[in-house]
Length: 143
Image 1 (cartoon, one colour):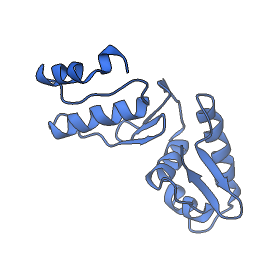
Image 2 (cartoon, rainbow, N blue to C red; image 1 turned 90 degrees about the vertical axis):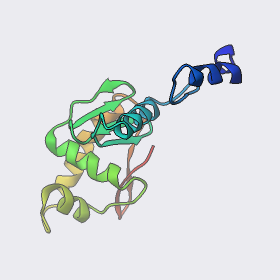
Image 3 (cartoon, rainbow, N blue to C red; image 1 turned 90 degrees about the horizontal axis):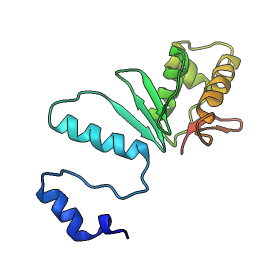
Image 4 (cartoon, one colour; image 1 turned 60 degrees about the vertical axis):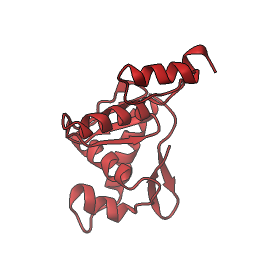
């Protein structure tokens, strides 16, 4: 515990008007989620933020930040990541993703594979794998 983490320092911060406290090291996703929650409670922010490890997805702005870096995604890649992130730790089949992202009930499942591959390449340039394959079943997002 450093001097800044000492209980009297935290109490002094709250007494000075602080609403929250985070101990280092912390995930950028946690910091952004806490700031977003404070802003939403105050009525200053109506943005929908999703966090997954060091990944932050802003649904309204349609942006993705990974480890503090903005990740440039195509609209389809963003929608695919959003579908997976909304169902974190739940396996989604290729058919479910085709339906949710493209609106197709039946189409070539290779379409999903191609976009998953591109999405992984962009996300993994900034950190470890988040989109995992569950062989014979589908894909899952987990940090």
